[in-house]
Image 1 (cartoon, helix red, strand yellow):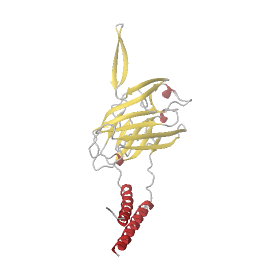
Image 2 (image 1 turned 45 degrees about the vertical axis):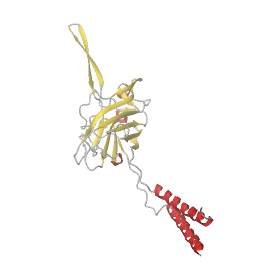
Image 3 (image 1 turned 180 degrees about the horizontal axis):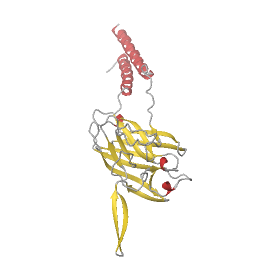
Length: 290
């Protein structure tokens, strides 16, 4: 049976140990993030529209795949230069990513006030009619409206910079529905079709009101993700609007790193508490010996 002084000794030790445990837990590194979100705002000088887009990269939803949710949350579209047509980014890993576009879906596609739900952006059908000798036949062909591109070039994806003011794409990875001299094999009559808008402005022109667009958000899945992939190494985000690289673009700007700090107050307090507890134990031991 413990004597009363021994019981107090154990209580002091317990105080010190529990305090140290709090410090250790607070200093444990967090696990790799499963997703990263980037956003950027700006103004389209051609239409004076406010631009606001975001993207979420997530490697936890589909094993071995990267899910990308691209959203336009800016003002309603007035003209094609308000349409979000491409996303570009870099990956700061030790080796380049060898990815391919496995899926591209839109919850809603809008055209002339008519909405279509759950649209596969890689299988858009175009129906043509042919009349021959009084007999009409119809044929539907399917083509992708979005594409993925990547490069190992140090200069990035580049693109068509033949027009004045065009800014080349320095990023090495991208998704797009406008060719821009980067994306190949995209169908459709007009390049801005199936780009992403956030509804219509009351003064929207005919290319906006008459063509189909993804409303608000589209989700893409890239396959071929390596086991060592770290979503936190994605950086250098560019949101591209319109059908040419001389039109509006916004860039995510990372906040500055926080200043280095001295040990946190809770750390210093816990260590001091542990020291006080240990000192009291020593004093009690001295009394017992005496």
